[in-house]
Amino acid sequence: MDNQPTAPRTALSIRGLSKTYKGGLEALRDVNIEVNEGEFLVILGPSGAGKSTLMRCLNRLVEPTAGAIFHQGREITSPKQNLRDLRRQFGMVFQQFNLVKRVSVLTNVLTGRLAYRSAWRSLFYSFPQADKRIAVECLARVNMEHKAFQRADTLSGGEQQRVAIARALAQQPAVILADEPVASLDPKIARQVLNYLKQISRELGITVLCNLHQVEYTREFAERVVGMSRGTVVFEGVSSQLTDEVLHRIYYRDPGDADREDAE
Image (cartoon, rainbow, N blue to C red; front, side, top):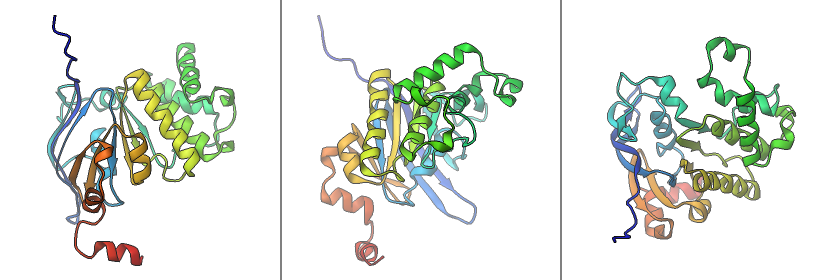
C-alpha cells in the first residue's frame, strides 16, 4: 500500500494581482502566490513593498486593479462574491490593535462574532451565551481569559495584541491576516505574539499570512517566506534561503539604495 504523504491543499491562490491607486501609484504588480492550508507564511519586505495592500486585497477592503484571488478554489475577486460571507473567513490582526478602548476585553473579542449576528444584535452588542463561550475559549488560547472583564485601555501593548488575535479567532476564520502585528512591540513581547500566531496555525489548522519587515523574526518563525519589493514578488522559499543576496534583492532593489538607506 502506498504511504506517500498527501500533497498539501491550496488555501489561497493569488494570480496576476495588481493594484494601481489614483494618481498612478502602482502598489502591486503581477503578484503570484500559492498558500497552503494551515501554513504559517511570512510576507517579508520594507515599508512600501505592497504588503499591506496585498492583505487588504485578500479580504476585499481594497479592490485590485487586475488579477484574481481564489480561496479554496473559489474566486473571491468576483463581483458576485458576498463580502460579508467572505470577510467572515478572513480574520484580521492589525499593527495598531484596533480595539474599542472603553469596553471590556470580552466585548472586544465578541465583536469577532458580529458577522454571524443580525444588525440589531450588532448595534447593541447583544450576544448569546454560545458566543460568549467561544470568546472565552479564544482568550484562553492567548492566555488572556483572566482579564476578560478589564477595560481594553488598561492593557499593555502586547496584551492588546493578544486580545486582537483572540478577536480574529472568534470569527472562526479559515485564514488569519496579520499586518505587521509586532511592529510596535519590544522583542520579547513580539516573539510571544508571533508564537501565539504560529501555535494557532499549527494546532487549529488555520492558515496565517503574516506581514513582517524584521528579518530575524522571519528566520525564527516562518515556515515559508515570500519576499516583496516595490509591489512585486522577488523571492519565494524557506527561511534558511534568506541569504545576503536575497535580502539585498528584497531591501535594496536598485544600485545605491543601500547607501541612501544607511544615510537616513
